[in-house]
Image (tube, rainbow, N blue to C red; front, side, top):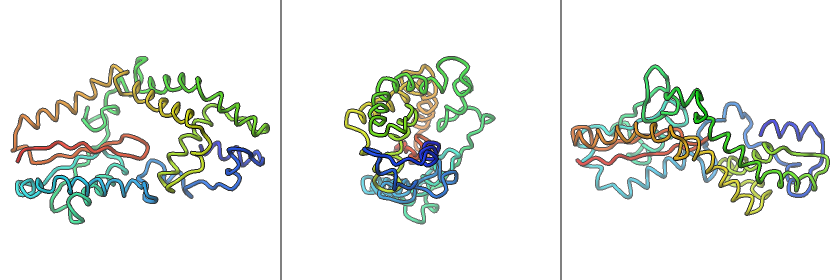
Length: 270
């Protein structure tokens, strides 16, 4: 997207139609390189706020479980070694256990290095055949399927924008980055004019495009998906089989999207 913004600026054209707002639009971060891949801290959809409120919601729902769990030993939180994931874990813990959460829980940070072998948090980084794309079904399989699907709906959007701006033709990749910008900017600012560029049908196509990449990257459409998922399933089954001695509660946080981290809760009997 940064390349597109620069190309528009260098072209020195006045955009019209659905892109008219770009003439006055400023990028939503003053330091993209520093802020990319980090937890967002502003706006009503900030990652910090979401993590904290998720903890509060779980505390509201399961507060009756906390006293008995805390009396056994410290509760474990596991986070992959990514700054935004670690920060997510800390905000989540503050919402669930309070600002003094370190008295209650212990955060384990698991390095994402190949020498540690496979782990349940980031199996895609430690399954070398998958990560290195040694066959057609590696990590890039989802991206290839995404490119194939994008070609079915993006050209029509490019043509529509070209009619409005004959001096500025956009590639399929540039149009797709505009659609992605809607979500990224909304996360930081709370809203985005990029969202108004596209019709409902075009957004439905984008939604399906995101389904396609995840389905074939690590979901049911990829033969490695079940293998990598087995690591988490096996670890969870072993904890359940071990019984209360393993601990009362377990939380695992891992990288899922460009901003969000997902939380998986393993409820243990106390």
